[in-house]
View 1: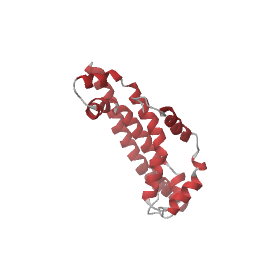
View 2: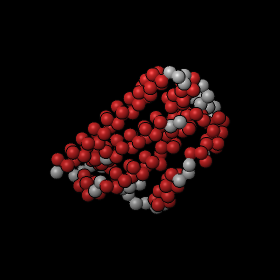
View 3: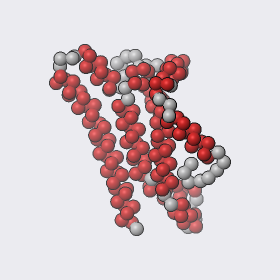
View 4: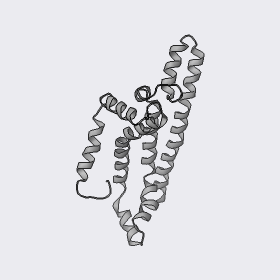
Length: 182
């Protein structure tokens, strides 16, 4: 979508853009009915499919902007040297897009990890709930036990900090490696 022009490209981009304007509450009832009909209610698979669908548009625009910023002359130079489309993409374009991939991964992970609404809507038992919903229930059960509540919040926050530190290090390495190779 970012590297080549083809027919109906703008229509496809507009379709992805239009999904960003729809609030989650507006699709909650149809989504609930689809998950319930597919017998995926109260399963982690139903949540994973929901989060995958909700994250596609944001990931699309992040990656599209990064792939657009990569000069097309690099593709042309690789083609002159005899590389095909797949080799050009895998060995030249994809390594240059690592910062975009890391950014999309961080944002998608944080959105899914911290989501409360769809996790509460699409799950019914503690075995399939996500951590924000479990903390909400934990807070209502053990209202006076602040030490246990804060300890559980630290346990929930720790993976997001680790994910961010690992992925942000990749972004910095990719940017500095590209700057030093020239």
